[in-house]
Image (cartoon, rainbow, N blue to C red; front, side, top):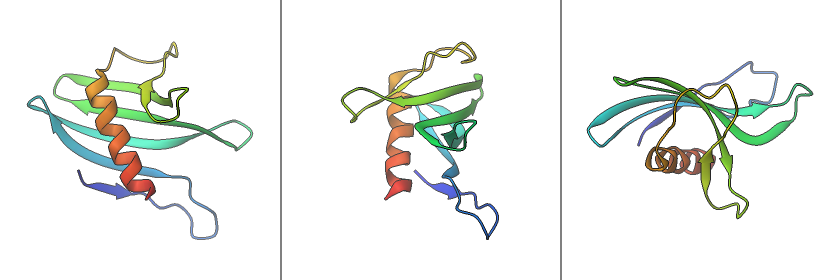
Amino acid sequence: MDFQLIAGRPDTKDHLVFTTTFAHNNIFYKAALAETISWEGHLTGTYDVLLQSDKGTQRLTLVKDRDGNHWRAGDEIEQVGVISQDVVDLLAEVIKEVRS
């Protein structure tokens, strides 16, 4: 799975923002992921995701489970639709790859 990092201004520390594309179950996805930042400017440990396919567009938050090893979709009110855990696992793999 390929990804493209998105850089910000050269004089500030960038928070992780990237785009990726992948196919799963014969569906092609495009995703934009960004580390979630609180209103106070602190990282929250989650990722905001905009996920697009020919089935539509979903906005969700990825949250690490309590064990710290697995990701799940958040349950915030603004989340659009229900995403399959298989797709969440694919997004988690690209986060791991980008972070390394």
